[in-house]
Length: 168
Length: 141
Image (cartoon, rainbow over all chains, first blue to last red; front, side, top):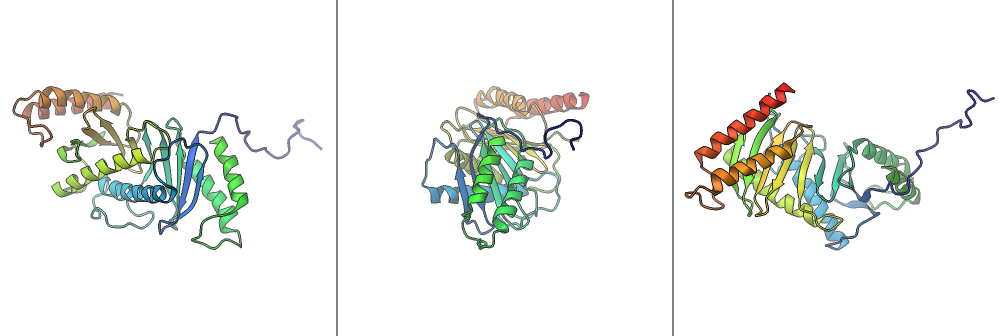
């Protein structure tokens, strides 16, 4: 029996728009700086080889985190600059924007870092990163064949990710 | 209430040439401000390397949990950045005004040596006026 004449019972996922893909690439690092996942959708410019690129990205995030923790104008007690901080400790950043791209960053309590690089005009992506983290939990952490700390090779995760990123 | 927490000016090689605090809590000594300035200089450069498309000119806005940082780079490579409350608008305009004050009162000062720390009384006075004017405008809104 149908109520209200609606034909759809379950809400359908948002329809991906054809030109809606504003994402350039995505990185996932664990707390040791190992790049678990690198995905790229639209990257015309590569200045470094993949390994160097991942190292540079992790280094930039590490430095930016200690920079924001030290710069924080609202806290009275601040650690010395460069002292490694635990996830969630001190003031952290969630995005930065240049004239050509925007980088959104999220760190989970376990030290997993999710980085999404998009078009500079995209808005706040904190909720999207949380959703991506949920996908990670569902498709990677709950995968019995995945051992933590190794690069992610899960077909389902990749397809779910590609589909979701199209809607961002 | 402080809309702007602090202002940094760094020269083209990453040295801090001007730093002014407008009421951030916690102590930041001279060494810390120098270190933060040169750290920002290098992160600005690294962000250009990591760009997925050509023509990147470095970080313009950094959004942290407790503050926003707006950065403006002049054509000669000096960087001006302000630390302000999260979500503060019109910071690009204020950075442009500060840059104009810098060109008028620092660069046109015959006693100022390029790339050296800024000690110009007129610059200080006019900067304070500009920042206060902004604060009044913010309160009026």
